[in-house]
Image (cartoon, rainbow, N blue to C red):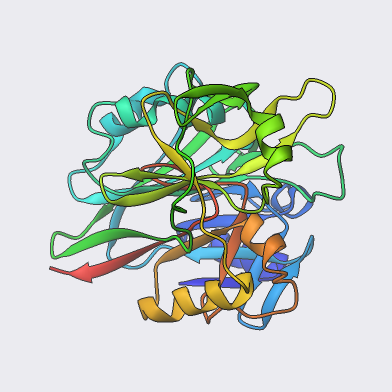
Length: 327
């Protein structure tokens, strides 16, 4: 169950010993008492009343009674590959990672290669800050220790009762267009060049000449699953194109197919899934911005609007949710 609560309400829950997964501003997180929780900085939310930007309210996911045990583990850049070794036999893991940190980059580039990472749901999000406040740094907070951290990932590993299971799901409103095939020589969050239909080009020049809308991501087909890589910007000095997730060699990308109304497309996708009471959900800050969701509803699901979504691997412009089901 996920709700927007006040600082006092969240503090009461923590002191009762409840296991919590939390999103809020650094100002709010730093005032919470120690307890069984992890959290990350974010001021963007989709509430029952609509999209908001808040530095006072806190989004709280309360882990259900089917959880028998939890373990909170902090991971440095070098220990990230150990995440699967801490999975419980029957459970799932909730993760938070500070945006643009070394652990963010390593997770994005390497997580799919770690032994056992796909054995059970690993879901979560990339923390961020108010885009209007450039001096803030994305952070995560370990509720057990009270540490506010900018260079480590936090994971709450949870064990479920044997009669229950967890499913991780994504909603992606984007499809590949029928246009050019784009490939890359190196793995990375930025590049100067790409291969378009096999020919090497300046990617920034290609974007400018073809009047490409950077609100539409690159889309790759990963064994039938459409995975987005969102454009961050084009550096006007270096002409490097920067992304919110890494591109990989050996993968063919295409620009996303455009559509008329971003807001209606997203709302229709949510309704088509008929999602009933997810344990946890998160959505992309770019969906919040590009669909102009501040003050508007997008379905009835309460969620954080994040700087990247995680469902085993790093995703962009995607809605991620998990559900608990009886076997």
